[in-house]
View (cartoon, rainbow, N blue to C red):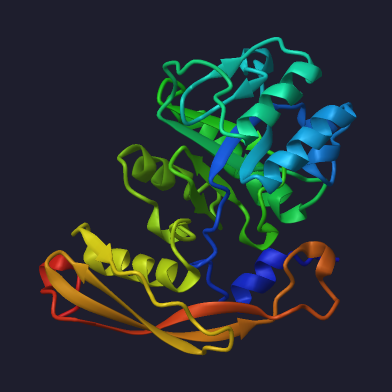
Length: 301
């Protein structure tokens, strides 16, 4: 019998990813063998209660401690790594790691800044929790790891990053960009975009500093702009029951207005939820874009 994946159900329903780019404000990478990952990051096999508690408290403080591993040469990975500064900790026991994470939750650095790759790509390959991430995530990880320049880009397998139905699910650090629905075939185009300093628009889930409607409008203007600079005004706060909104911005020097409407999708969030009544997932969709930007700046003639 052919297995049904939540990713396939989501794609068949045309549920968009735009507007789902929210991420933690800060990240640390904790080396932990993939074979010891469990359903929760803070309850991995072999983890002491002190380290588990430190990871849980960090999450509450807006610091995401990602459990990561890689294929081959795992000893070259630091025990704890800050992708924003390059600070690394090697050969530390769990008590030391717990203390460092606790201090980092309060804003302290884990160590001195150091030269480091410009990009760190986390690819969810968490087969224990997400079948979609096992199927698409590992293939995407292998494809990226095979072509990335390690001096410029570090590619890591990561425990659950959120979004089984968006597999392969990736996080790009330190820019905090979230991507989804990548695969081995799109890996080269993704890598080419991010190493040139551009978001990979087909898989970009949205600017994490913006609200969901703003993320959708921003991505829509980027797609229209064809490389022209895009700016966006902050959208006013919306009532919880709002079904439409308007976001203003610019493509180059030309004003642009994005009209959005809300649609509730009823797709399973994870494969484990297939067959049970799903909770509605509200998404903002582009109704139209009003702009007098010329075709050279991405607006259709």
